Image (cartoon, each protein chain N blue to C red):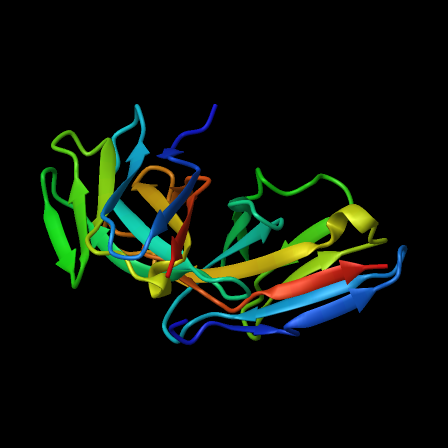
Length: 111
Length: 115
């Protein structure tokens, strides 16, 4: 059973469109991270959300942590080709001492 | 990638040889994680180590794979008698392991090709 479910698995859109990707679980997390990975590179940490209901913005990216700390979303406004990559969410549970990763959403933004 | 170093970046091995992958964590980090990634797939957790201790190796194959994080020096992921199915990108991440965040910072990866 996958602890973290990400959807959609693949997303292909035109430049300028908006999109939302989701990260869902039945488990509660003490924090949740979002990463972006470009081809041939390691994942890069984008944001950490800790408080239920928290919203964080990073330029055109908006991250939200669910009130119950079981899910999160990433919204991108006016997507650009540079946003292309694999977006990964990772949930941390204190008892586990480590984070669990979802399988990722592969985003392609066409010019 | 926040200072996590991995080497080599590319490694080619023939079937049956050994592969040694090295990871130097970010300065001040004492927690190291290894992941494997196949093309077009997400990260698969392999092992979680702290200095001189394996904390969780639930994702690591029981045979041929081993990992260590000695008191001095880098963490090593060792694959003995490699097979073609071991071809993948192997990523190391490190964290400070404090507080609630467990933020992990990744290295650039080692791409292993088994011929």
